[in-house]
Each structure stands twice: as structure tokens, then as C-alpha cells.
Length: 239
Image (tube, rainbow, N blue to C red; front, side, top):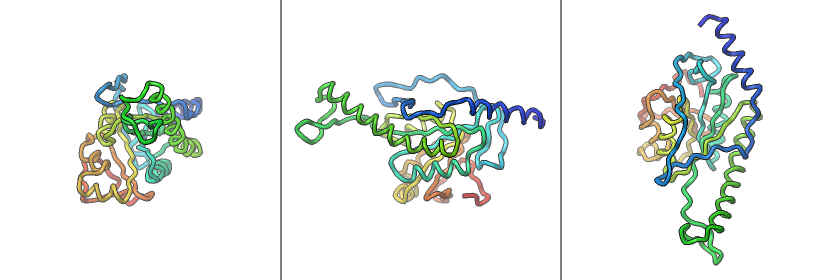
């Protein structure tokens, strides 16, 4: 690709992003992943060309817009992972995809106090509680969306219902053709990583080779030799 083609690609990508409206908290894509239902998504075309960009620690997909997936939740480590991504892994034509895994609903509040199994509650009680949980998820994700908006980066969300975050994320990798994934880590999960039980460790151990994974702890990239990974890591000391 000569400089004229490269320049045209960059201009086209930037123009598309400028025309897109920032996603609102109500525009969440919810994906259910449990034994009762399955994902139905159109297959995505595979990127054919990659090259390095000085503005990102990840390789850049030239054929399509650059997509960076960030797993987010209730922990502060999620915001640290997102802020790291916005600083180190974003290009002018990047789109951040927020992945939020939330548990399958099993219990609902009982009018008499305590919790009641979902199958013993009335449909109205279940629907009210589901609406409350959706509202909480919306408020949780809004702060991540706001961070992306402040950085002037386009953002999309994927909500996944699953009791097993690592398995849910691993299933999303081929489904959404994820090439770049950022995960936040806490002290607890770092200890679990050494014993191969943490979410980050499970994803690292089982993710396909074409998915680059970054683990972020307190705003810095973690390179733990006790966690084996086939992912391509930056070795220039950038963190």
C-alpha cells in the first residue's frame, strides 16, 4: 500500500467516525449466553492485513476500523483498563467495544424479605426486578461510555448473560472476531492468575493465537512470567 492509498484509508475511516453518533446508555446490545439460548450473529469478515502503528501497542487492522475490546465490570480495575486502552491502544479510527458479563438471574427479592427462586416468583415480580437490574447495568456502563466520549472515541457495548465470565469472553472471541482484548486485574485476580483460576488467566490460557490480550493492573500492563500465554505482548517497556 503506497502513501496515497494509506492516506485515503485514514481519511475514509475518520470520515465514517465523524458521522457516527455517540452511543447512548439505552443502546446496549444484549447477548444471552446460557443453556437456554445461543448467540445468533452474522459472521464477520476476517481482516486480511495488519501493520504496526506508533500510536498503539496493538497491531492495526487496515481493512476495517480498528476495534479494541475492553472487559468492564463493577471493580475499579475495569476503569483502569479502559483508561489504559484510551491512552495506549487507540488510533484515530478506533472503536472501543465494552464487554460486560453479568450473572444469570436465579433469585428475585421476596415481598416478605430475603430472596426467592425465580421460578417461584410471579412473572410481574420477575419483570420488575429485571427492569431494575437493566437500569443498574445502564448506569454502570454509562461511566465507561462517558470516558470514551471525553476521549472522543466511538464506543459500542456487548452485554453477556453468563455465570462464567472467562468462558463467556472466550466464546465471544471467535464470534465477534476479537483481535485485541484488554482485561483489568485486581490483587485478588493476580493471585488467582498464578494458580490458573482467575478470569484473566483462563482467558490467556485458552484464547486463540490471533487475539492479542493485555492485562492491566493499577493502570499498568502486567507481564507475569507465571502466566503462560501465546499472545503477542509489547516488550518495549510501554505501560
